[in-house]
Image 1 (cartoon, rainbow, N blue to C red):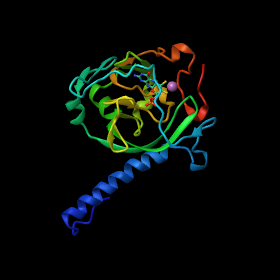
Image 2: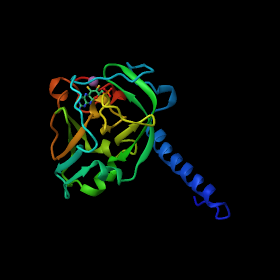
Image 3: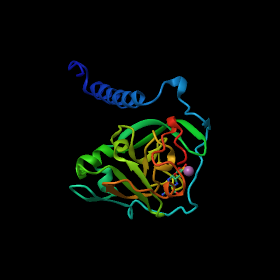
Image 4: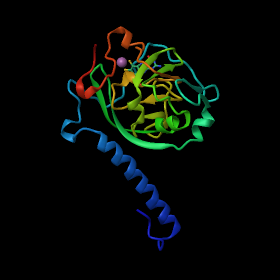
Length: 219
Ligand SMILES: Nc1nc2c(c(=O)[nH]1)N[C@H]1C(S)=C(S)[C@@H](COP(=O)(O)O)O[C@H]1N2
Ligand SMILES: [Mo]
């Protein structure tokens, strides 16, 4: 749709912004199950987002932070926080689901889509998975398809605030269609793989994919 040209410029801008929102939300709503089945099987709804990790909360300042992307890609890159901020920032609203059975609805996220990164690095045709690493050396593997979703973000903000250190700030992965263990906090490295390999929890009995709608909790 194009905005009627007879509208004042400030209104045109407003319409364009709201139109963009609708696009983003439609993409996300389209990817989500029916409202009646919004809570995945075996989950319960909680109001407050719990903190869950290995107990180490590395302090990573935005000045120190960088994301190293390599492995099976045509163009390996290293982004500083400024490089990340120079990319298109996207706002989404997504539910989150933890394998420990809590879910939260309607969290507002801001970040850069993984697709923006994929366009730049150009994964090899043989690339099938990505191994994420956090600054605490946590690792997690994710099939490439899940990064191509419009709601999968390199997240920097939640509920209008910079992501807290406890929840993985300044930068974490966010793949809301998978259980939250697939979303690496303090995300500093992505390695593209041509064959699947287990991450920290996948080596310890957790499911390789982790789709909450299929209750893929354990292997
Ligand atoms: N770097 C890092 N990322 C991590 C973890 C971790 O220990 N280190 N824990 C994972 C697990 S098991 C869960 S359930 C979620 C919890 O995210 P939250 O603490 O923001 O709720 O982060 C995931 N990402
Ligand atoms: Mo977890």
